[in-house]
Every structure is written in C-alpha cells, then in structure tokens.
Image 1 (cartoon, rainbow, N blue to C red):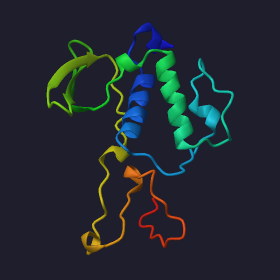
Image 2 (cartoon, rainbow, N blue to C red; image 1 turned 45 degrees about the vertical axis):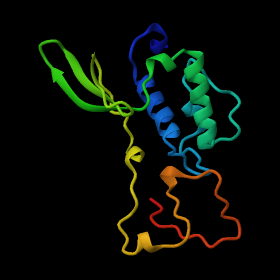
Image 3 (cartoon, rainbow, N blue to C red; image 1 turned 120 degrees about the horizontal axis):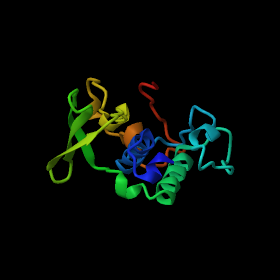
Image 4 (cartoon, rainbow, N blue to C red; image 1 turned 120 degrees about the vertical axis):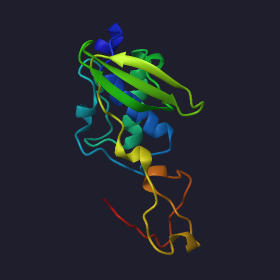
Length: 163
C-alpha cells in the first residue's frame, strides 16, 4: 500500500523487474512458480482465483500487470532503463542513482532512502560457450528469450544446462 501513497518501495522494484523481464522476451515456456501461488499475491490485493497451487509465469505476469494498473504503478515504474551507478552519501542519508535510458542513452540522476537490487540474473542471458554452436543448423532457442510460436511437437530437442 505504500506505493499508493507515492513512496518508493520494494514492491515497485519487484514489479519493475517482472515487467521488464517479461517485456524483454525473457519468458520461460510453461514455467511454473516455485512457491505457492498465493504467496505471489500482495496481502492488500490478494488473488483468490489462482488456477492452481503453482501458477504459470504468464498467470503471475498477468497478476502483476493487473496489480500495476490497479494501483497506478505504471507511471512510477521505469522499464527500458538500467542503473549504471549507485552511491550512498552518508551526510544526506540517501542513495544517489544514475539511471540510463537504454533506448536514448540519456542518463538521469535520482535519489532514494532505500535501494533494492532487483535486477535479476535473467536480464543478461547469453549463449553457452560450446564449440560448434554457431555451426548448428537447427533452430536455437534460449529459455530466457523464448519464442512462443515455436512448435517442438514431434521434434528431437536437445536441452543444455537445465539449471
């Protein structure tokens, strides 16, 4: 509820990460959460209609999208931006954060009382370093940049690095 009052919160950081990750194409196919669905809900905005005990990534994304809309967090949440520098200044008791707009390259400065690293490791995925990978003639698909239109039915699929 703090975000509704205009305060910067961990909720906004988590929401920004979820929206940015989904919008950047990092959508795991048929992924399910590893925690019980109800634990993905905010206490002040519960979701009593989860489809199962462990919801899909798409269902969780849709919950957070609705959550963002319901509490007008879209205008307080930046996607397509990256923190390039953060510095604690003890005299002021604040973090000063340089934020790059990834589309324009412009860097702006903001400040906050609490800084939460919610970048997520899946935002900087890469292909594994496998000799001959570039010579592979089949379709390469990375789970962090999943192509929803791909049909693997009846195909032989190789899975490398199941994490």
